[in-house]
Structure formats: structure tokens, C-alpha cells
Amino acid sequence: QQKVQQSPESLTVSEGAMASLNCTFSDGTSNNFRWYRQHSAKGLEVLVSIFSDGEKEEGRFTAHLNRANLHVSLHIREPQPSDSAVYLCAVRTGGYKVVFGSGTRLLVSP
Amino acid sequence: EAAVTQSPRNKVTVTGGNVTLSCRQTNSHNYMYWYRQDTGHGLRLIHYSYGAGNLQIGDVPDGYKATRTTQEDFFLLLELASPSQTSLYFCASSDARGPNERLFFGHGTKLSVL
Image 1 (spheres, rainbow over the protein chains, first blue to last red):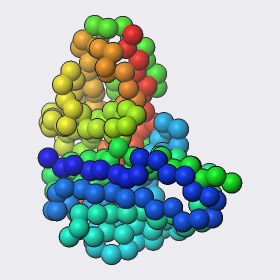
Image 2: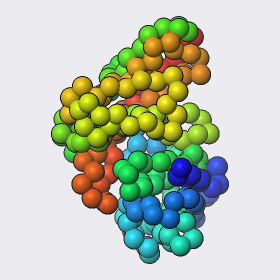
Image 3: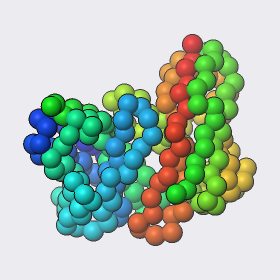
Image 4: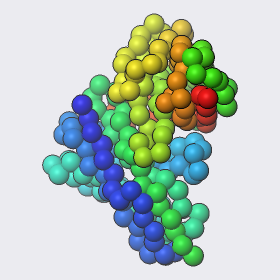
């Protein structure tokens, strides 16, 4: 059964400093990875999707995938207070089952 | 943008009560999912379906039934609700046509079981 774990549980950064979030998964055949953002128990917003090893950038959000290390990360460049939210890593296996991590709560202080 | 509509948005019931959460998607996606979200657990998959009449068991299915009556409609049933089922429930759909398919989420249903 796929296990998806995120770290850290919570993170505080200053406005303008880089924020880095981590996600590990257990199924090396996983082929679809997404990072979502959620403000205060509201709907989920897709930030960046990545399907092969390497880097994928969407505006200020960059995902790095290393399937050999079972690791995908999210880096937020120049974070703003409006980026304060819960960030969720989602991993899809070949059977179309999508498993989420438990989330990282990010606080960006002015 | 695909539309996924959940109803009701909020629901309060008592222990032992019978609850049905509804989800409708309008883009004829084949896959639909029910998740629950609790603090410290992220989103956990309850049930999912790849078409009308189909049902697949997720990771936390105990106490829940689901039914996919049409391509558009997916229902989550709690026949004997318990306080442990107090949670925020999300429905999602996907066309699942390749490795880069994505989930489209509804706005969630907040369920409180007293």
C-alpha cells in the first residue's frame, strides 16, 4: 500500500526567503505527482505537476522529482504572506488511486 | 474547467443517524473519488469508482458505503454515523486518460456527528 509522508509538519519562513517542502513515497512505480495548496479548509488549488525525474517550474513554484530516492520536493521562491496555507503532496500509482500526504502548514511572516 | 458540485455544504447529525453526501461532476469524467480530511492526516481515500455501477475500496472504508449511479453522480453513505466520522469530505473526479491526468475537487462537505 502506497505511503506518502510530508515533512516538516509546519514551517515558518520570512517573506522573501525560499521555502522548501518535502514528500517521500513508497511505491517506486508511481508516475504522477502534484502539489496542492489549501487555504483554511477550503478547496484545493493545483500548484505544480511533475511526471518525470528532474525539475518543473510553475511561476514561483518549482517541483523536483527523484524517483530513485522516492522523493519529490516543492520550493517556493519569494514567498508572501498570502502563501500561508497547507501544502499537500499527491502521488498517483498505476491503478489510478491517488494518495495524499498529511500536509505541511506554511506560515510566511511579513 | 471541470465542475464538481457537492451537497450539502454543511451537515449536522446525531450518533446513529443516516447521512448521504452527494457529488455530481459535469464533464463525464470516468473516475470519481471520496476523501476525508482530518487534522494531521491530510486527505484519506474512502472509496473510488471508475464508472457507473463500479466501486473500489480506498484506504479508510470502514463505516462508509458508496454508490455510483451514473457517470455524473457518486454518493457516500453513512448508515450509522459515529462521532469519529466528523470530518471535512471532498469529492473529486478525473478523466484518467494518461499519466498526466489530474483531480478536480468539489468545495467540500463539513459533517458533524454529535
